[in-house]
Length: 94
Image 1 (cartoon, rainbow, N blue to C red):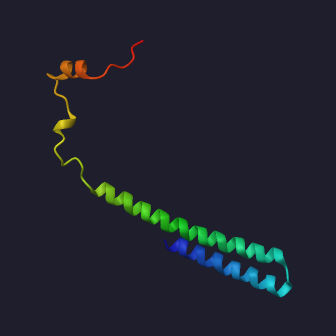
Image 2: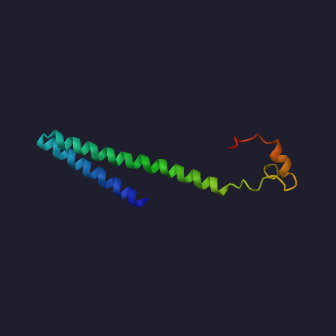
């Protein structure tokens, strides 16, 4: 997190430096370069927040225990297997 913060601060500082040089020398290409660098910094911040929310969501999902519920309806006992196969829809046989 700190590394990304320093990277974004560095990109913003570089973009401001490029734009200041563009104003002083009246060059459009430097202004465009500064805009592209600042867009990259904004994109990096956006991806950081999206991934932070995603990682938090996935962490929350792993902490939930779905196996503690009664799962007896999902299993078929060995004795009921032949009747279960007969009552299930047939798959196309070759």
